[in-house]
Length: 619
Image: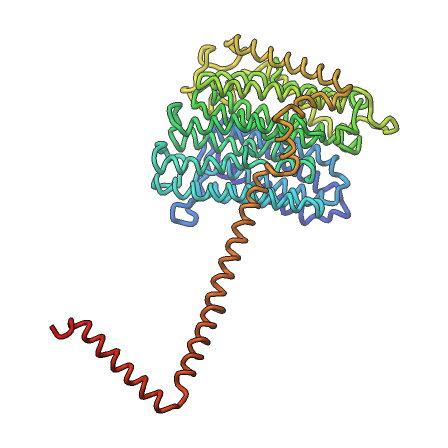
């Protein structure tokens, strides 16, 4: 094992990205997609080859504690393997789905740059170097959203501002952490969560949550689902950003700082996770667009990961990391199914879909498997990771468990609605001819759907070979030192089954009430109290980005008024005062000798009176 392999993991996709931009796409329009897929295949082979190894390499760089230090640990190798897997599947899929898109070459170039920067961020063992790669991802995020046409530019700016603000917090957190630790080497940092240490943790936590798309740093994701190329959603919000954000949150919580269940920071993390679960899934529930519904679920599922890590308990942390992997699998599959529907049906508006199960059977099966997984239906992978998170949440407080369980009810209810509206029932347009998606688009979906089954039925594979070795011997489960196998808390399993049955009953009631799948949750949408909140959200009044824009607008108007006031003091009041004084002086000094004598006498009297006042009248 040499440093060259770690450098290649970063340099090869970066060089390939530059080459894609230089390729003559008119002569060989297939070349950018082919090169991107081949490069990601190389990255996957490399990630598999280096996975079992541990290696570190340091090279002097800028000084002041900034070194080019990379380290391959079991954790970083595990995340690198995930990055390579999902990027390869998405590039293979996008080779067909974006074959005729004018932005295809730019998109694939930015995908490769994203892979290179992601690999660098995961392998970095120096906080400054990590920050360089992390900030580079902000540029590729902007470029990938704005790649296609003019309309997504506003969404790209929105994403840049929101994620940029969280990255600014991360910068301050890096500086404070380095100051407190006396080093920028991530392997050498181990700080307590007290005083400034807690402040540094919170700043780093904001950076991690911003990358993962947790609330309140989420509102660009539903907009990007509509405006950005769909493979982008499968690659970044669906998989890579969750892997990176939760990876860094886990590093901060488990390595850089000492997070314990007794810490107030742990409770803050759990609160953020619970709020993200519930609020985002309630927004997903009422969406009428396939892609926007999935986008809100991409936000909601982050909450389970943050909640699990926030428990600071072995079962919760393992569950949170397992859910990170599972979410990337089923969420990518779901976004790819949406892309197949959009390509063949020409729309993702649920009001214009229906009956696709007959004409797109393979896409439908993949969707059903992924939907069951995200809803926590056994024996699929999402069920097992959620049960671990539930177990840790309940141990910390029943309210956290109750919110997480409620999130599962609304998740199941929204996917029952989505599946019914898109794939079952009567077609909304009987004249539309829809066929199954091409095989290059189906194969990534099939692979991901298969992983949903394998990682559920044989969950010892991801848990014992990927996740538990990352966390070490301190993370022991109930099955003889492992968390694999069927959950041991049958009460929680029974409650999960009850909630899923309740979601099915809710769907049946809604469909009977409205006569259509898309109306299955209308009784929740228009429930007293919720309807007014949904109306506010529909107008954008609850969008944190718009709130921030309003605050900035008020502040800018206030600063403008202050600027005008200062300008008036100097340009108006001072000038007018000088003119008034000069007018008085001109009137007082008009050349009359008698008046000058009177002024002199008055001055003399004033001087005498002043002297007498000071000396006390001569006493």
